[in-house]
Image 1 (cartoon, rainbow, N blue to C red):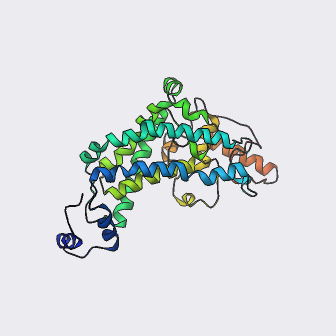
Image 2: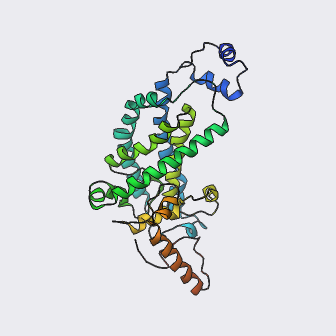
Image 3: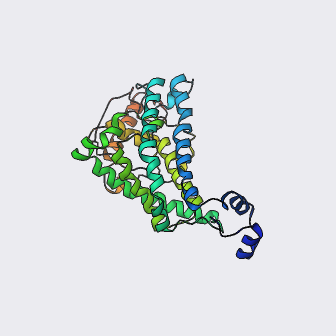
Length: 302
């Protein structure tokens, strides 16, 4: 809750007039406790899990002309019933694990120093902190993901997420309850290292989930803005990890590809890309949207 009763008090404390964004923030947050502001994440996550995958559902179910060429595993088609079942399972886990976890984890936010007051962070500050959050989460998630692919971790926990060998948007948060708890740790490490404003924290949680839905979309759209991000993995990259399935030792990265490259866990993926490129050249450059189209070849390698 802001320690000012009026905008003029806030302006006096800052020694300047509030910006338009700060005025909006004051009007919205002045009477709300920090705990209530933090719990907004529950609403944001619910909306993201429910709304962001919907265009992918329409594309998959309606099979709109022109989109099939971008499907990474065109032999696999899920029905509307299959996708709604996935969504129902995700919502059950959301209301039984994710939501309650958000409600009780506020002390950790207080401990690391996420602030809600004025001034608001600059655009540069937000971007730099978000970059730190993504890099820290990506590196930590890489090693946890590798651990979950040993026999015990996979059989007891991670196999649930791999039930979808051809992932869909709704399946991004589909996982064992223990995996949800474990992977929550990397998400908090970045903000703990570089604590920022609550708006930055909201943005981080939202962007990370939208990114996860994109990488589990099952479609490799050439116009996706993330293709311009250096070392970004994307849907095709992570789809290969699900496609291989089982005790796969390839493409563990959650966002970027540098860890897989440095530690040699993308060799199977790169080999497959090389073989498919040769096959395409041998078949007069047949195009399949730039993906490892399994209708062309069914080659799996770690």
